[in-house]
Image 1 (cartoon, helix red, strand yellow):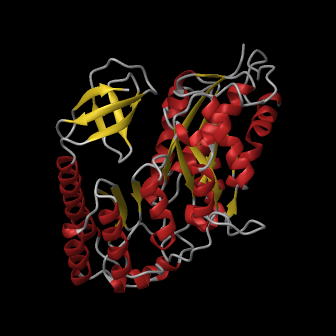
Image 2: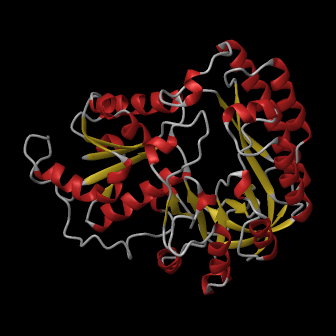
Image 3: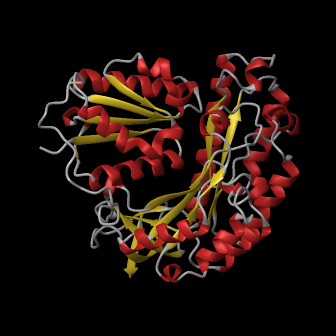
Length: 429
C-alpha cells in the first residue's frame, strides 16, 4: 500500500507554505494523507521564535510517538535547524531535516523508508508518481482555501531578540518568472486567493540580478491576467518596507486585499533602539495613520513584544498609550523569550516573569478592544468575500471572517453585507 503521511505545522506563514509544498510533493509521489495516529510518516515543521514554540514542538512529538509508536517522525523547520541534537533525541524521531534541506525533503524521506531497520514494512512505499505537483494541489488540501506562496526566505536584519536569521540564512528571493509560473499553476488548480509571504518579504528582489523590489513584483501581479479573478494578500511586512508605492498599489488595485500586518514590536523609542528596530514610533504612527486615511476599511495588524530586557514601567505605559489610540485592528502579543545566540540574551535588566505576564494580559485586553471596535465599524459595509470550509464562513479582503447562510461550497466568491460583529447577509456572487 502507499505510504500514509501527516504534516503538523507550527509558526509563520513561511512554514505553512513549506508544509503545503511538502504535501504537494508527497501526494505527487503517491502518498496519501492520514491522521497522525494512523500515519507511517509524521512530518513536524517546527518554529523557534520563542521558548513556548520549542516546547509545543517537543510536546507534539512525544504525543505522536505515544499514540503511534510505529510512525517515523521527521522534524524540520527552525527549531530542528537550531537544535538538531535536541530534536534528534526525542522518541521516534527518524530524521532531522534543516531548513536548507527542505527542497530535498522527499528524496530524503524516500531514502529513509527504503533503508532497513527503521520500522517501515515492505508494503509501505512511495507510489509511482513522478513528483510533478501540477495536478495534485487544489483548494482544501491541508485544510486551506487560500494558497500560501513563499516568494522569499532568509533575513539579514539585526534585530536584537531574533534567532531567525540564524535558522533561515541570508535573504533569497524567488525570481519573478518563477513567481508568475506558480501563480499560473495554482490559479489553474482553482485557487482564488494567494497569500504572498516571506521571512523578510519586504526585501524581495534585493538579492536578484537585476535587482528588483516588492513593489515591482506587485505591479507585475496586478498586470497579470490572473488578477481579474484572484485576490492577492500581502503577509507580514516590516514597517520600513511598506513604501508609498506598496500602499498605493493596494489602494488602487482591486486584486490586492486591503490588509496589512506591520510589526511594531514596541512603542517606546528607547525600547525600539534597544531592539535594533530601524524606525521610531513617529514613523510607524505616520505610516498606519496614512494607510487608515487612504483605506478607511483596511485591516492593520501588528506584533508587540512585552518584557524585553530593560523595559521599565514608563516604557510599557508608552506602549499602552499608543496602542489604545492606534488605528490598528488586531495585535499579536509576545512575552519576551530569551533565545541563546541573540544579542538580547546578553542584556541586563531582566523583567520578572510575573510582570511580563501581567503586561501581556493587559495588552491582549487592549487588542481585543481594538478588534471589537474594528468589527463594529464594519457593520453595514458590503464586501466581496471568499467562502471557507463548509461554505458557512466567508473571509473578506480586510480579513473579517463572517458567518453566512451555508448555501455555497468552499472557495466561491460571494457578496456579503456585514450585519453584526460576526454575522453577514449573503447578497450573491
